[in-house]
Amino acid sequence: MELHPEMFEPYERLVEIIICGEQKLVPENNSILRCLQYLDVERISNADLCWNGECLDCQVTLQNGDKEKSVIACRTKVTEGMVITGLSPALQ
Image (cartoon, rainbow, N blue to C red; front, side, top):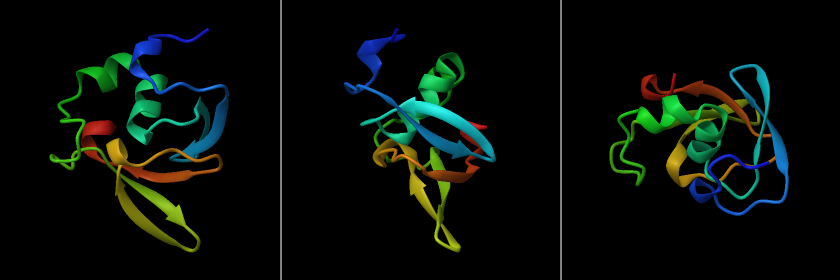
């Protein structure tokens, strides 16, 4: 059963990702920020975020091979197996 389906892009399944060492299931076809909202709707919905990439407050760090790279969560789609190693203070 989908909670708040109007918030999310349509999806058929949940994909597995790792957030700061914890395995999570999130909806495919959605931004990282929407997936974080899926996991904790109240906290993310009430965070002071612009949702369009201008504030940069939704920055996360992704594992990229043996390196890491920072991306904006509201503009980056989640992928199965994604490893998020860090969250900006607004997302913690």
